Length: 497
Image 1 (cartoon, one colour):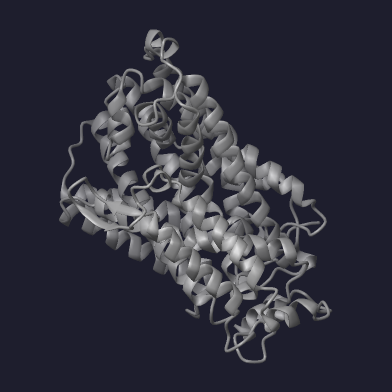
Image 2 (cartoon, rainbow, N blue to C red):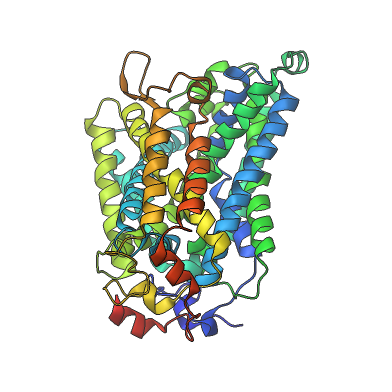
């Protein structure tokens, strides 16, 4: 089916969060392959692999197995959740109204939006450092305040251009930029491979199986779980007839291929550079391992990888902002988002003395409610067969998803319970002496090995599966006749929103 004028490469996407009508659906499952390949080709995946060796004591073969299971497995979950976008034609957090209620959904949506803003700020700041280093390496231009602001603006401008144009342009950029930056990464990877201390690699002892289990969880948490609530955003234009299994496979292979290569290389490099795993600025840490002539392609690849990841984050953040109830056009929502991240970049580069530690600590805490949302949403997706497009856009009492007081209490209780339990296993700190928060079970085997997110996800899913059977309003909604028109044309949907 041909693309509509609203979703053509180079044209501004005018659709917001309203469901995409069947007549405007187009594309193939392979789009999900390129989406997640592009998001994960950044050379910054190397420290994850280094951590498997430096912190978990695994050898290269164990690290490779862990990389395969963690990367492919977590993005298979991303692909599975993206099936909701194909079914309902709307972004993930908009579809979440059918799960939590039109009012209850505000909590998960707000947390998600704050998390996106945080990670975008980190991407923007790190990219500015990479561009500053590139200018120094290529032209000998030293860093100063004005140049720092210019570098931030360049990255913000590139992000705004791609995310502002919208879905079709993002899909096109993802594919072709993957070739360009993927090739640059291969050049850098090829050189880094020559620096590996192969003697240490092949004589490394075998690590315990428990470390492999922890490693799989660590890789999953650091890769796919963070994207799990965005898959539907990019699958919503796909035709309903595409089998869900293809979306799962495309997502798993799209992300898994580059991640396994990068994580495995990081594991190899850790034999000679154990500090790589704990570097606060991985761009600089890897750059010091390269000769000056190799720094230029490396820094270009690092900048491009961050851009490909960031424009996805900003696009989803704009949709999440609208879902939150901020009534603006999608393009303006994207603009507001990048203004906030630009301000954050200015503060963290030019004013704050240390931002990586405190900021990532804050984002670690936000990961708990996001993981709980994944568990609740996944159960609903398994049991649900359709979404009511009109009800998704109706936030009043007449909405099918009003439930009781605008809240689906089965989902809310499961979400809240999983957050509380997840925090019991969580410790947020910038160092051993600067602990922001420490749950009473943070130093148990589960907590100290970073597996609290697994408990959070499983508990949210189990509690929701049990409680939704007891919630009369949820049973009533589930037994209602499927709507005759599941999606709305854009103008009508905008009136409801």
